[in-house]
Amino acid sequence: MFITLEGPEGSGKTSHIPALVEHLREQGYTVFPTREPGGTSIGEQIRAVIHDLKNVEMHPRTETLLYQAARAQIVEQVIRPRLAAGEIVICDRYADSTIAYQGYGHQQDLEQVRALVKYATGGLAPDLTVLLDVDVEVGLKRKTQNGMEWNRLDAYTVEFHQRVRAGYLEMVKQELKRWAVVDAGREWERVQEELRRVVLEKLNSIIGNT
Ligand code: TMP
Image (cartoon, rainbow, N blue to C red):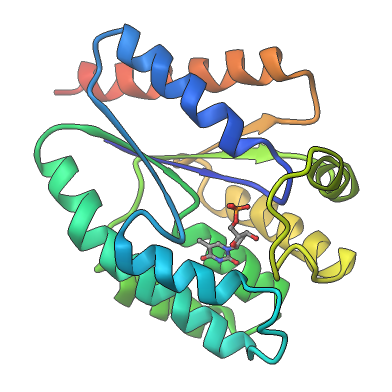
């Protein structure tokens, strides 16, 4: 089973994933956590280029293509083999980040961006995508206050990040069956509890159908 976590900046994905993984392992599942961009040696090198605050001249199309290059690599090198081995793969961001950030955020043609994403993933879609939804200003403030990594994309305008969040909510509406929305504006324990619940519900429904 392939699970992805998405969200605007400061939604807490990166702190929630290890706790979720530990919980699932305690239940006896074999879980492999990874992240995008990155998760492979090539992907981490591409991540450094995309996120480098010095690369202010990077064009949105360059940015879009670099994310797809990193994605093609992680899909083939990591995600497909792990899924084929029967593991649960949990990815911190995936294809929907490109639609939200490069599509809605940079206001590039959504059909063209979707086609690139399809090419990069070879059509591999998640079974479940959880949106950790948080107000944009609350999320950005969390990132600055907690001393979290501040990258070139964080430095885009608040309006950019508002388009990203609105884009996510639009995607949820278009594909209700794949998405679960968790309100990440609440205290950490409540968010983690709900995250575990939606993931286990999906796991049980898949196992129940096999
Ligand atoms: P983070 O997930 O560690 O916060 O950093 C990843 C950053 O990269 C975040 O700002 C979102 C951005 N991103 C995109 O813009 N498009 C993508 O396709 C992916 C995977 C990430």
